[in-house]
Image (cartoon, rainbow, N blue to C red; front, side, top):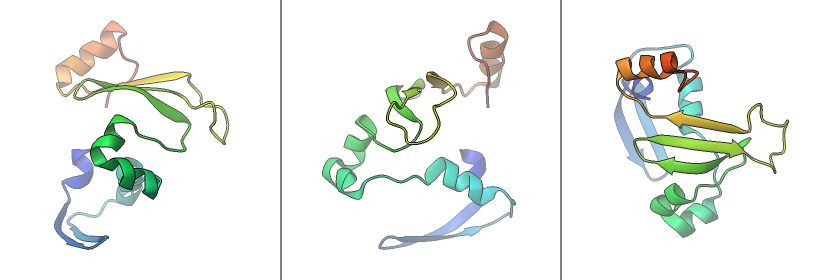
Amino acid sequence: IQFVWKNVNNFKIDGNKITADVVQFDPVYFKWMSFLTGYIMPKAYYEKVGAEGFEKAPIGTGPYMVDKFERNAFLRLKANPNYWGAKPAFENVTIKFVTDAASRVAEVESGSSQVTL
């Protein structure tokens, strides 16, 4: 998500309010910010378990649930059977964290991954 945050600086935090300056305008910038960092979570649950507890046992209302997470390796999601909307398109989704460009190409060429970003 570096491409989202590289054009933001001068952060100021005041209680529960954060302000910052956008250095270079991008028409889809705020869409990316909300997608990558803006999600709803139950305040009482987060206050109860804290950041570390939420990382170990996150909850949400989306079409997928966290099945397994290994830091710097992958995030595996499974369809949420209680999702209020249409049935998710895939039963399982695995997001691998591959930072090396050549390795990402090899992932696709070998068939190990369908998409890389």
